[in-house]
Image (cartoon, rainbow over all chains, first blue to last red):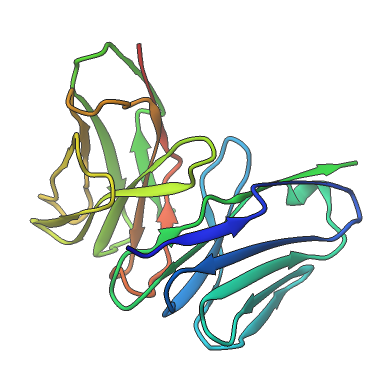
Length: 110
Length: 114
């Protein structure tokens, strides 16, 4: 079945440093979504990418979808303590349910 | 406010007992989902339903059962056949699904089996 791998599993950064998490799929994806889960909370939708090579920005967050639609990345510029949490990518093909990566847990040291 | 309500938030049960987790949504979404979250394991799909009175197994359906008698409700029963039931359970919904639809999650139910 479809698998979505996400690295790194953990990332500790100093406040102000950049952060990147990577997502790779074993199959070509129809779309990829990113979610953020704060400690003790539930996943909250951040963004969806559907086009090959697509790049979207949300303030300090930049999301990319690979040309082959099999990989994606989330980059945070100048991290802040409010960025703490676990970031999940999730993708699917056609009308199948989303498959989630295991997430990258971000810690920001002030 | 529209959203998804899960109850209870915390639940403790003895081994061998069945447990039912509630999930109600007022978003008028057609599709609903149950995910299980374990530390370091991400979210794994248990069951999903695209329409009333119909549901499909996800990747880890063994030991679980669901029903979808109403559009707004998708309860999950954790049966005694589930070998490792202690986990954080998340209910989600989407406008239609699954496809490219975005998921809205409830706050979750944390089940501990003693």
